[in-house]
Image 1 (cartoon, rainbow over the protein chains, first blue to last red):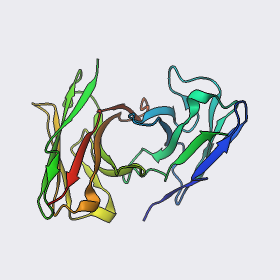
Image 2 (spheres, rainbow over the protein chains, first blue to last red; image 1 turned 30 degrees about the horizontal axis):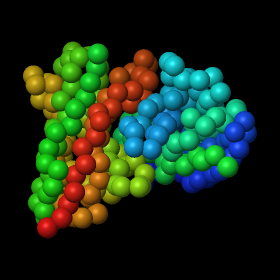
Image 3 (cartoon, rainbow over the protein chains, first blue to last red; image 1 turned 180 degrees about the vertical axis):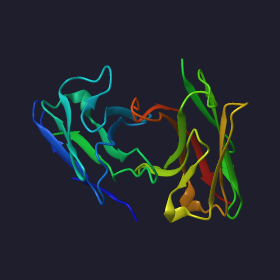
Image 4 (cartoon, each protein chain N blue to C red; image 1 turned 90 degrees about the vertical axis):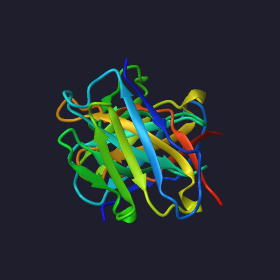
Length: 107
Length: 122
């Protein structure tokens, strides 16, 4: 079965730190990878699609990279409002699997 | 303005069938190249993709739940319906529907409903 493996499952970092989250697909998916941000009690929102394209309105401190099986979400300077759980997802053809999520907290 | 709204029962009993409806407003499911997925999230846990219906009416299901899920759409009503049979307390979750534009202009699932919490309990 197709799997998206996301790591770490949680992290704690200081304001201003650089944060990196990785996502690995069990098979190549080209650039059909999205990153979502879900703040506590809220609906997920797409941050990045096509692996590296920033959704309109998303701060430039968020950056996505990767192709094929290995992908990365980087927050260049962590801000208090970035406290959330982040998910990767393959979204081209089914199964449209999500990664297990990374909970980001402020130290 | 595109909106999605989930509707259905808030409480179902074990072994019953859950039927949820996603009503899409602000665009046409019949003329626009849009697909709709159902996604769920148990309390305090991760998102889990369940099923997807394409503009072509093709369907895809989470293989771990194969046999329990059925997705369909009524384009005249702009609705997508998910049925899940043999519900169990572990299926207690917030159920979301989400919309994606197909093809090269896709921005992944850029529209989501607010979600509906379904509790499975006798």
